[in-house]
Image (tube, rainbow, N blue to C red; front, side, top):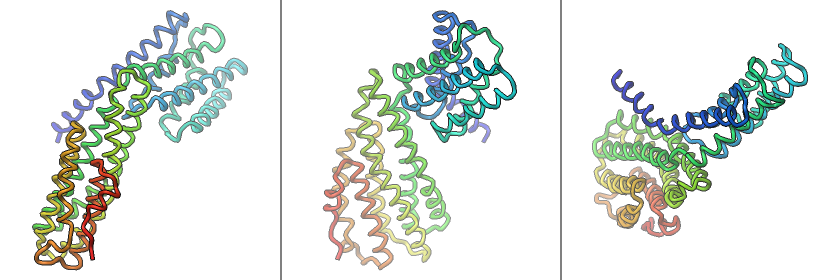
Amino acid sequence: MNRFVIRFSFARVRDSFWTIGQIVLAALSSYLFARYVLGHQVPLLAVTVAISSLGFSRDTKPKQVLLTAIAMFSGVVLSETLLQTFGSGAVQLAVAILLALMIARLFTSNPAFTITVAIQAVLVQLMQTPVTGIYSRAIDGLIGGAIALIFVSLMPRNPIKLARQDSKALFLVFRNTLSTVATVLRSPNADLADQALTDIRKTQPLVDNWQSSLESALAISKISPFYRWTTREISQQWQVAAGMDLATRNLRVLTRRVHFLIKDEKPRPQLADLVGKIIIATELLEQTSDDFSVTQKAKKYLRKIPPSLSPTVFDPPLTISESALLLEIRPLFVDLAVAAGIAADQARSLLPKVD
């Protein structure tokens, strides 16, 4: 267990190298500009605003950086105004914190961000550093925010890398759940079914992460000249993500149905074989995150599945409860077909009619 934790910790640091470098360079640039171009002797706020604006969030959108910079700059200006007008003191400090918190809440519901804005206001009130001109600290804050925005535009974190990681995380749970469903249909096991149901119920954050990282990737690709090439891949991933969102919801329903069905401990190899075909289609879709040309293979394979989705092909015939399970698999097929780029109406038209 300790080895796993240590390995995971080092992997986290390794994956953060680019982010760390981006923050360090942005902070250094803010300091050098404020110190040697503007002549501010201790440009503390230029550095802290740059660091806080970029932050260590999993995906930094340019809009998010801009809003963070504006909110922090507003807090600094407010506190500087209070300091210039009323001087320093306990009452002024309390008022500065109060107003800074209120301003921050206007921009976001993120509690950590709100506290960060308040801290900037506190620094203005309390730090005893040489000041070069009125509102020089506010100017430092503006510099930090502007440089953070420049860095997220010209030196962004790889916008497609995180999206790929998020897609793989979702596909892993999705594929494992399907495999467990096939296993328990072939050889009923209540414990395995329980675990599959527990795992698939936790997938919504994975779906949300994938969609969020794609939104961030799209925003970066629009403003960064270095990542314009990712626009097409992002669009393609959106297609897969939209279909997998629906497929994941249907898989939750399907897994719950299987969980109930196997209570009679009766093997159902025909349905297990059908789920096996869905697994192969899922594996092909999973490969599209690395090579989108595989989509054509996924489409071709998915078009072969519909005949297996007719109740008439099963021998012996399905029971009522088994037919209900088959009806749950059909919309899952449609969702996977949509993820592969087949129009929803066309995917539904491929399904054999049910009397």
